[in-house]
Image (cartoon, rainbow, N blue to C red; front, side, top):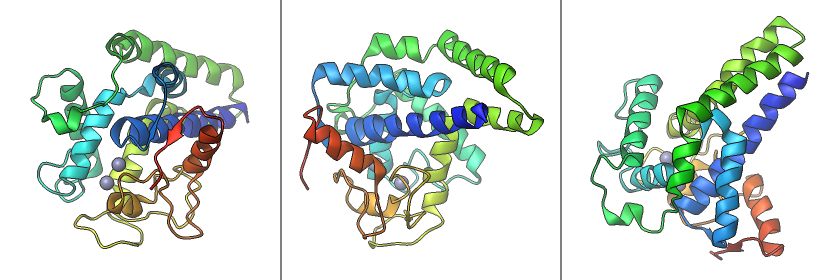
Amino acid sequence: MSVVILILILWYSGLFFQTFFLHRYAAHQTFTMSKFAEKVCFVLTWLTQGSNYLSAYGYGVMHRMHHAYADTEKDPHSPKFDSNLFSMMWRTKNIYQDINNKSVQIEEKFTKNVPQWQRFDAFASSRISRITWAILYIVFFIFFATAWWQWLLLPIAFFMAPIHGVIINWFAHIYGYVNFKVSDTSKNLLPFDFLMMGEAYHNNHHAYGGRPNFGVKWHEVDMTYCIMVVLDKLNLIKLKRD
Ligand SMILES: [Zn+2]
Ligand SMILES: [Zn+2]
């Protein structure tokens, strides 16, 4: 049971910092916060995403390109231009690394105000950090797995970020319903998003990228936005009103 709880904690905490910090802050700047709070978010992203750590810069720049070029040849990830989800994941990984290594020329509109903490990113993305986290997950499983099938959950810990990425970038660009007519294939994957903390309302988000709340209909509760409202009330962040 402890192993299942660990996977659930890793799933939702890592996802929270992906959607809250990398997506809604770094890429879309739907709220502001102090430089100190920003640094705290970098560290918490590392603690929650562990071996799957994504840098705000690499994610933020790549994601802005996704919105600008959604479902065209220049889109970093699209089911329309990638033959299967594994080739999409591989291409996404390579583009993310090229952006982070600054080995490709990027237009200024994609990099403007995207937060970056180069020294921390280098440490948190290093092989030593990723391997140490992976060993910690294995050690936890050795101590706490109580049935053979629980070991099947270990790859989820190792591939958390690609799994989260594929759910939205592949499945939410193929399956689901549409609230807004947009020029890309984005869909709302779930009518009530219990799985992706609001990210599954992907059609709403493509229609209104700058909105902090991804939900529109009464049943589209956006858990991340609910937390953001509380953080705003506590003056830890400042929401931009839409
Ligand atoms: Zn999309
Ligand atoms: Zn977005």
